[in-house]
Length: 151
Image (cartoon, rainbow, N blue to C red; front, side, top):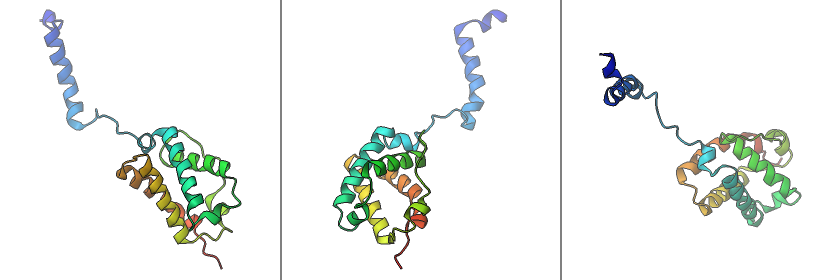
């Protein structure tokens, strides 16, 4: 009987029997890609952010908001932020969103305009709509820290 266990077909059958409970419970699964991976990792995020800022500077609804901004630093921070929010391996080195935007008087319409520009940038690089929606859903809660109607 011991000799039968060493035969190739018997060994495979035994291994299959050991794996069957794991397969049945779903414990052995292919890991789905993270949002970071779906966005093309740092390279994909970088392309999208660079296009987003190009669009924002041309967008009459919001271009004035960026007139005094250090665009190179802003690009770096946006890339970090999107990397972090999409489960990437980055660290966000910028200041708190509420503090940064407190005195800027950004309206809901301006926030939405930037979100539209982000979607246009993602479309340019063929980011699937489901991936776009996942990113927008993760960024949307920041609206409460960014939008401050002018008094």
